[in-house]
Length: 453
Image (tube, rainbow, N blue to C red; front, side, top):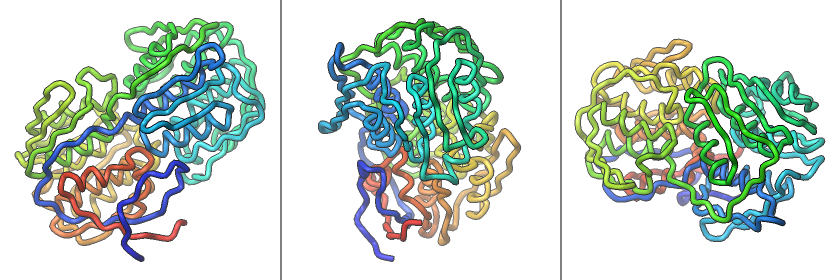
């Protein structure tokens, strides 16, 4: 194995593969601009493609994320017939409106939300096939609740017991539709993107214990940014979107990313120093914005001025017990703070973490135990007992999961000896510049090239 320079994101989503060695850091200090939101980027790009360019003209999405999820969405939209041009940090999209190409095979890589959003829109087409080159990750994630909902609308489909590969054909008209929100909010979001382009729209009834309200509100926010009328009950159990509408926009700006920023904020909280992080809207709809409040509750010194947060690190942290459902994508980053907090921190109501790139409850427990921490789990919760120090000096498995890699990196920064993390290139799924940003704050890493598996 040989060391190499810090990797850049690759537009084709197929970068070099590498492990990373995280060296202990004495402090973190400096100023960063939060990366663009992964969740808003994928939503804005899809809405831009659903805008009919012949009547609206192109849509400029300003400041798009450079993550693998964004690359997967751009690739699939281009395959479906959208014009895609990257201009600096922006994407200029010439949309296909309600008429994506028929008979196209789409490969969303390992991007679950991208796959599901596109599956909903696929009901506008005939003969759309979905495949993945990640059979052991996205290939194992359930899609059945969405497929059943589309079937009730009149779509025909094929699948491997509700999993990829999947084929979807329309047409569908719309109307009232029940869809389960137990396993993921992404099924409902997928149908919300489809709804305004159907003759009869959709009157969605979300059944079961609705997971992740914040992403649903982000989808509603995206629809509004593109001129789509929609109404929703307070608890989001009913969402009504009239049919016969058209997506319209000229320019939309992507806000900063709270899920990835939660990792930077946690790193800044557990190490001495002072870190300023900009481009984080105070009233943003991303649920992971709550990470700021959680860290403050744990004792972190965080001050806000406009869109900038300043963290003065190294203050003692204390354990908390929180319902994590509203900020699931920040739970692993916050678990790094929990690892050094006095007492036992418990994240409750986080069953959906088991359905991500890895099982973020059991796999996290195992990795933290391997690092010497005391951790326990139930079906729906994860509990971590903080310790004053972590030895390090060993290797940890990144499980092909960008959030796991963030957590392990933060632990490595506070360990007594260097920590090696396998498969660190998977960070690019959501935060390609994660290691670069930490280096700007004073962290030190070694990048060890590995053979692609």
